[in-house]
Image (cartoon, one colour):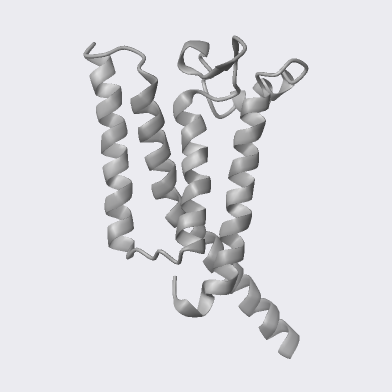
Length: 159
């Protein structure tokens, strides 16, 4: 992201963060009485196994621990990359993303090998880090989409 696009990138970052934090809030609301319908909304993107999910008053939230933290990481990442103008090169962003995927694979592998069983902390950490790493790519993509749309609009207005 270049210095000339900071203004719109910052706005997009705030909007994306608001979306992901709202999404996370809806997942938490799924545990409240009268909001069971939210589980259906999240069922298409998460297995929702109760033993792998946080609970509020013994009612599971709408996303498993890892998925919940992926969305929290996406929200936090958009704030960090847009609002603090933290700019990584594409190469370093890919390294960060690959590192988080390897950590997640290690977590899955260690559990599959029986080294530990259903420990939420590694799921939260790997999910949050993965979401954070993905946010650089979504923010960049949304920013470039905005610019290309804006350029097309301006060129159509000048004809």
